[in-house]
Image (tube, rainbow, N blue to C red):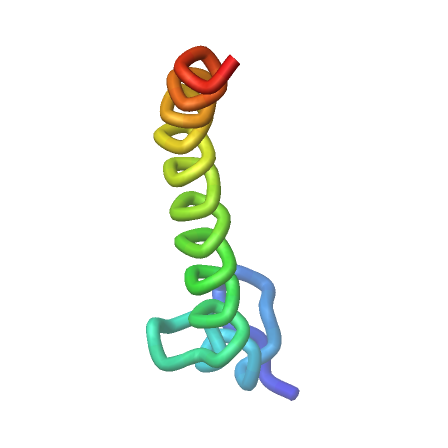
Length: 56
């Protein structure tokens, strides 16, 4: 195993996370999913409060 100047083995320097990496892609999908859920909750709560206020 030849070492690069950074000290990492030669094989690992080529397997840096890229946009095509499934792990990175899955992480981004989960992140966006959580963001969408949070945004929808934030917009639903005031609506629910208004509806509850009107109903009761």
